[in-house]
Structure formats: C-alpha cells, structure tokens
Image (tube, rainbow over all chains, first blue to last red; front, side):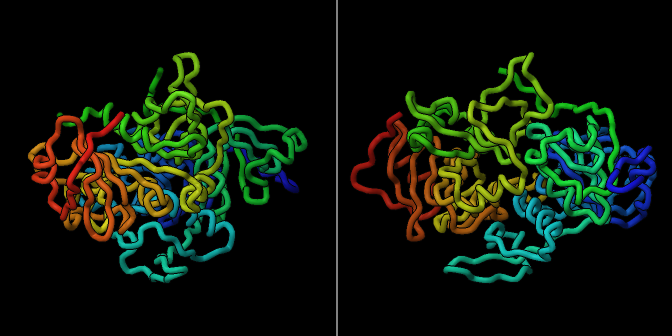
Length: 231
Length: 218
C-alpha cells in the first residue's frame, strides 16, 4: 500500500485485526447492497461475540444470516429482523440479543458517529419502548429523546465503483446505509464491483470520499433478490 | 358492506393532492398507488432511499440493486432521485413528506398507534414506522375496524407496544372514516351500507357520532 492507494490483496488482509467482541457496522438494506464477501470472511475467520449494527440480519444461509450458523453474533442492532428462522430461534432461546432501533435513528447513529457527534435528539421513539430510560428534552413544545451514536471497530461496506484512493460510487438503491456505515468505522473496509484509476470518476459524483476508506477490495457478487416482483 | 382492501385504498386515494410526496407502507397502503386520480401527479417515497418509485419491473428490467422498502424489485419513475438512508430519513423526520399512509394493529383516542410488535408473537421490528409517524404531520392509518374475532382495534388505550404517541389524526377502516381529536374518535363517514350502530358496536374507545353520517365516496 502506498500513498492513498487503499487496495488490499485479499479478503484475509481486508478483515485483518478483527477480534472477538468487536462491533461491526454493516451497510445494506435487506440483501441489497450488502458486503457479501466481507461477511463471508468474518464467517471464515470464526470471530465471536460480535455486535453487528445493520438494518437487517440477512436471511438463512445468505448475508449476515451466515454469521448466526456458528453463533458468532452476540447482539444485533437493527430496525427489522427475523427474515431468518435461525435468528428467531436464537433470539427466543436467549442466545442472541437484539436492540430494535428505528430505521432513521439507526442511520443517524451511524452518520453522527462518523461526523464526530456523540448523541442527538430525535422525536422518533418518544413515548414508546425505544424512548424508555433515555433523556427527554423539550424544544418548541415537542419532546425529543437523546440517542447516542454508534462507532464501529470495523465498518463493512459495499459500493459499485471505486478508484484506488477509495472514492466510492454506489449503484441505485444499493446505496442505502452504505455511505453512513463508511464514515462510522475505526477501520472501514469496502468491497466493490469495479476498480478504476484515480481521475476516472467525476469528482462531483463521488458519494463517499476516500478519506473515510481504509481498505478496498474488488469482489464478485451474487446479489440475491429477496422479493422478486414483476409487473 | 365492509370495504374491500381495494375500496379502502380508493378512499385513502381521495386524500391525495396534486404534487404530493407520499410514503406508502406495506399492505393496503401500497394499493393506494393504483388509485391516484387521473391528471394528478404524486411522487412515492420509499424509505430505503428512493423518491419517485415506479411500477414493478418487467422480467427484463429486474435489477437486484433496485428495490423498495418492502425489499421488492421496483423501477424508478421519471424524475426520481436515489439517496442514502440518512438522507431518506432526513426528509421524513424533517416533515418534508406530505402524506404518510400506514397500517396498524391498534389506534387509540389519544392518537397513539401500535403497529410493529405483538409481544411473544411478532418481534420483527419497527423498520421505518417510528420515524414516519414521528416526522409526518399528515398521517392516515388504514386497518380493519376489528379483528377477525370481532375485537375492536379502535381503543381507549392501546394495549400493544406503541409505534408513536399522540401522532395519529385520521383512520380509514373497512367500516368508517374516523378522525381523532380532543381525546375522542369522531365518526366522519361510514362505508356504504354499514350502519352507525355497527360502527359504534365495534369501536371500543369513545366515539362522537354526529346526527348525520354520510356514506363514503370513492
């Protein structure tokens, strides 16, 4: 690695330093825009007691769902889970903890962490179980709860194209949580479909500037569809 | 007769206005898109990061990178924009979406809504619903008036975990159009052929019934 070149040679190198008990922030919505191969590398490594911050937890046998197979996940922080049987089994058996977090709050927790903001007030969840035990403050006659941001030891991200400097472009709705996740990792690892040379991407069309990216790797993706719906 | 799902969607569609940005939840709310009046333009917001959701794709158009909040494959309408989840919820939380339509398990006279969890049974999560009800001023809840067992879903107090507190003002059920104000339900319209007595019987929370209750128009 030299200068701003973020490209690493292997998935092993991409996830080097991940150890038991760490927090991983993962981009993706359902199975769309998920870092498939980075997740598979976490499975291969066998790292345990992980806290995973991701909108969903994949499905049985694909996406983050594969990390449940060998009970690598201690806690999920998600807005919507349970598309997988294994998840519900482990949750009901008390083997897995889940912190249900409203989707917008989850996105903001990542965004704020990456932007150096430790906590923020939001009306979302006030008066519900989500607000229980959280500080309440009134602004302009409306009640807001204090939500803390989440910084990951690692962030794993899927983008469409990148240049070697880690400037990223996402494709369609595979963007979702990825730009926030990219900012919220102490070490941010990105996998992409296509690598180009610096200067080839229009600087004004970069979604995630390379400053957030630590490691970059090119992968091939299955891109499984969760709900195949046609006209 | 109680409204069909399609009729319910048709009634909700009458609340649309030209130029509205609208977020439709999963289920009956999704059907509202089929009844946008002719000559009216609305833009559908999908909270995974798409403003200007188009129809489902043809087989040839299917793209794994193009889905809606229900994780279904979709297309983008002309004039659509695509953005991150943070941006999506900025527009939701910031009150920029003109109308939100979502389903519910229960609504009560204080405008509380329970729609995401049945303890011990359904623990999948709130997705974007808590942000949507907190951020929108104009929300319509669509649901059946009572459960299959005849238990009212319009209550004095919600019994299930809340999605939002004091945020619901309009409910369209298969029997009636009801508004929520001053800690009461107010009966505004009834489904064609449905009697006021039937609605009263199936509304557990306090219901104010005016002398004349017009039938719904579609």
